[in-house]
Length: 260
Image (cartoon, rainbow, N blue to C red; front, side, top):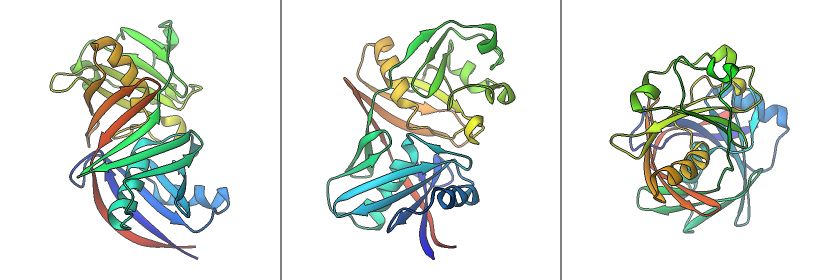
């Protein structure tokens, strides 16, 4: 069996930055074990698989270790492939997913994800939570899939050293760390060792949590954001009541073929 494979760097306008994702179009769904093995072989933060039926697209995302409920950068990468490489002519792509209907619109070089907003709850900063990072946090929150720790400034987030072995014990997908930005509205980093990603370069889905929080803090609905990983990424975020728009660019890196 031959399967097309595309690799795209998401939330950046140039290769070797942003977050790399593999995209595999399928004619029909393969066994979950096969999808998981392909994702492990690709060894990227996410591999997106999609099946098109007429004008409907169905998407799933796998890390090297597990299937996840929502992934922003791999959805952006998939839309980039469909719009720009496979020459899809519609203005919007709608994906059926484990997190409901997700849409991606295109305007010039920018792609905008429309995702459901995350609902977060403020929680106590316990000794256990404090041990996950090497400096004091100001606030802690729990969302649908992730914890979020708030710090005093960009430098605190940029220089933070997480205890990844302790984070492996969390009953969640991962941990977002964030602070108000200097050259943007807010900054973040994201750690998810439980699903095989020590630090994710740019995490679109984390911005469904970050956007409502910073919208409330800053008193605005449209914001810019940077993820301060080694590769880095830039995002435009907009709060729409119970939805979040997350905009970014993407850079095509390579295409190939999987033989299994």
